[in-house]
Image (cartoon, rainbow, N blue to C red; front, side, top):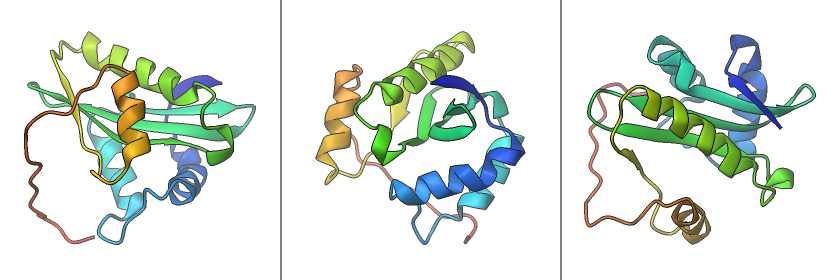
Amino acid sequence: MKIRVFDKTDQDQVVALWHACGLVVPQNDPVKDIDRKRKVDPDLFLVGYIEEEIIATVMGGYEGHRGWINYLAVKPSHQRKDFGQAIMQAVEARIKAKGCPKINLQVRSSNEAVIRFYQSLGYGVEPVIGMGKRLEKD
């Protein structure tokens, strides 16, 4: 797998991948999320590909205090082949290069397999409560 920054021409493949991985939920329009990301730190939106097929994605962010990870996805037929680890290492390196001291991410508490995956990468469960407030309805 090769890794590069997202390009607008990747959009259809990326959205299809997110659907295949169960990442698209009614309250988040994936096209709007892509458009928003392209305006802020577009260099932290990475895709992994083999030949012309996108098989992995990750959206990283850094707002000056903490880094964030969103939309990590690996095509189901390519999971458990270290592609998720590779694209995470790539985005972590880019976030660290911006001066970020810590990366946060959120996982649904019921998604035990994904929690174990992140733990294998050194992430730990922290005693915090995730809170959110919608400012725009998608």
